[in-house]
Image (tube, rainbow, N blue to C red):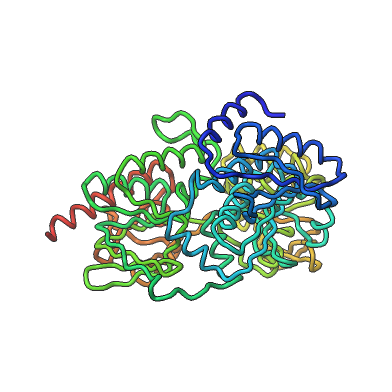
Amino acid sequence: MLDQGIKDQLEAHFATLSSDLTLALYASKHPKQAELRELLSDVASFSGKITLRDDPERVTGVQFDLLRDGRPTGVRFRGVPGGHEFTSLVIAILNADGKGKLPDAGIQRRVKALAGPVRLRTYVSLSCTNCPDVVQALNQMALIHADFHHEMIDGELAEADIQALGLQGVPAVVSGDSILHVGRANFAELLEVLEGRFGRVPARTADEQPAQIYDVVVIGGGPAGSSAAIYSARKGLKTAIVAQRLGGQVQETLGIENLISVTYTEGPRLAADLEKHLRAYSVDLLENRKVEAIRIEGKDKVLVMQGGELLKTGAVIVATGAKWRELGVPGEKDYLGRGVAFCPHCDGPFYKGKRVAVVGGGNSGVEAAIDLAGICSHVTLLEFADQLKADEVLVRNLRSLPNVNVITSARTTEVVGNGQTVTAVRYQDRPTEKIHEVGLDGVFVQIGLVPNSAVVKDLVAINRMGEVIIDERCRTNAPGIYAAGDVSSVPFKQIVIAMGEGAKAALTAFEDRMRAA
């Protein structure tokens, strides 16, 4: 079942396992049972520390549990973890043995503080590129928390569940009959959702951690933040980088062909290269964290993290980038994952042969419409302006497609549904102010990005677009607070510009520090 290249990798990965790990396969007459047994048998064959064991309990589908030293870990797979989810299985085995990239002690404390019991199911598609991130994060939480159980479920084998829940997007995280999250998410975002749903056990006084002290704290782990942290560390400053995930928005970028001296790369590869470069320096990488507030205490800034962690520093470089912009209309949040989507690559296959709309006529919107036209029966593109803003070559391509209808001067006013799924979208024709309704099955929102400036909006000047206003040296109007990259007012949101701005902000912060000494 496994090719030789994968076998060689597994042999290397599993060579250092020290715990006794068991893959407990439940009894089943499902047609996929033999395929699952063969896969698990292959995996177990690469280490004497992994055992495939038959569990006599019978199930209707196919499933197995991961045990460590004979005890349940809280990790279960319902389905055959092939495709992208094979990596989730391998990582779960390594993580159960305490190996691989695990959350640091601060994040583990937050996970352990979740008020249990936590029982979650994540519905996935084996072809989904975003699903493994969610599955792996929740599996890690199950391994950390004593009363946390997580199941990966192949949606193709759980059609009844999918229909009962009204799911039209993956990954979908479910607790009981409630959908907690749909779509891409990183560890930090998922932990925030779970803290909101299950609450936290109050920390004891003895568990409270004193503030960590740094010369420079960079908020954001994308190109600007990584550059700022590296330049700060090169100046000999004690530096930390706080990020929900290293790489930031770059992680969601496919082909990159305009990073000078690099003919071609892809977002995940560039993010990995950024992390590798960061780890070559004495930079504390505080991942899976979100700064909730910044307090000014004299010349110091105190960063308050979710979970109560504190950092104290003389200089803060804000490089938080931007996020997908939402429509902000009735029905949008109600039908997220049930007809409202942001990623055509991940959720487009759910709309095969169906009618959809794309809101947004820039490059991302037009590209999404072109991609979806090859899957869906019909695509309606709605653009607020009186003409499309995308590159002319994309517009020509779009208009050549027979199953695409372009509507300009359209203000999207509402996403309409029947309580279970999207049934239509309403828009206002701006010249006539007449309301129209388009019957469809899904809406893909592609209207650009909004700066992630909320954490400093009460401390520094912000322009009408939400960008942090900076001078030519990346200084804000607040002493000791700098900004770089897409969150700032610098023109042209490009990776190469963000990198340069990050370096500039770090050098300015160092220069200001020397002058104040």
